Length: 123
Image (cartoon, rainbow, N blue to C red; front, top):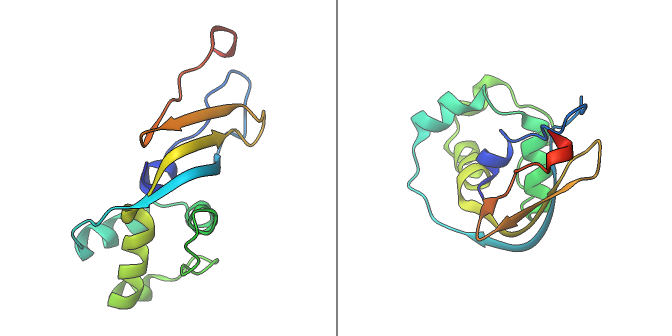
């Protein structure tokens, strides 16, 4: 699971008001190369919750992103875009769990696929 995917997932358990961001508890992390596309990154920048991405990348062992949301001028820097690209698209959670910040419910991630299915009593 890429951090791009993680940035868009939340816990939808009935009654949960704060289901984002899911906390990552990694077991296996891999890196998979992806073609660099600056236009895609510039388009995605405004759609990303920066704090969630920064925190998740640190948990996954990548601390090269700034903690605070950078302003739009960084999008002109290839150095920044390459770091953003690496964190967003190339770091993968292969095995581990995603944890709901409100309930502590754990959602397993196996072979890079998060299982976000809810139990009957959670719907």
